[in-house]
Image (cartoon, rainbow, N blue to C red; front, side, top):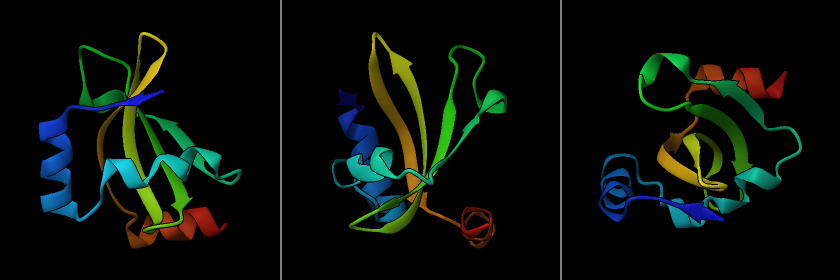
Length: 88
């Protein structure tokens, strides 16, 4: 199950033109690149994911796990260097 803060979702739509509700399929990408995001939080373990979505193409997502749920933190379209890494 996926969860997020609704005000954060609205801010990501404004800032990055990406809607959390439309990137759930990112977890279906067998070529997705997962990494730990150790440098951005002292209170929770965060992870990053670069993967393909139907709506936006390649997307960068930051998320964490909370009570067996995946909580989205932020998302944006993948930057050029991420695209190159993904294509390798």
